[in-house]
Length: 86
Image 1 (cartoon, helix red, strand yellow):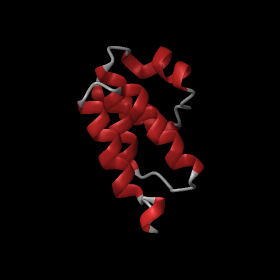
Image 2 (cartoon, helix red, strand yellow):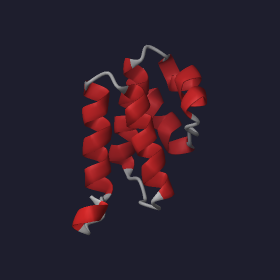
Image 3 (tube, helix red, strand yellow):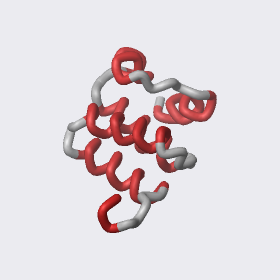
Image 4 (tube, helix red, strand yellow):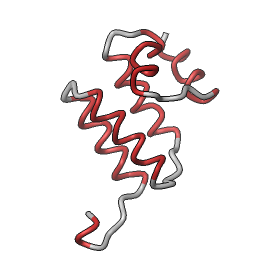
């Protein structure tokens, strides 16, 4: 996207994370989330839901071991969303 001189926004990142999650590529999904944070693109609740869904689909309830491995920090928002999944 950099070559086209356009910057990804929260919608772009959400679409990528969701697509990677649906393709069972959780590492890529979480890498995309990390890239979003490095780009200082503020995540919204939809992005958090997408990340939680990716973690949930790995079979790691609460995302603990996967989130630790991917260095994703669970915030109060993500913990509340996770509680909603139960």
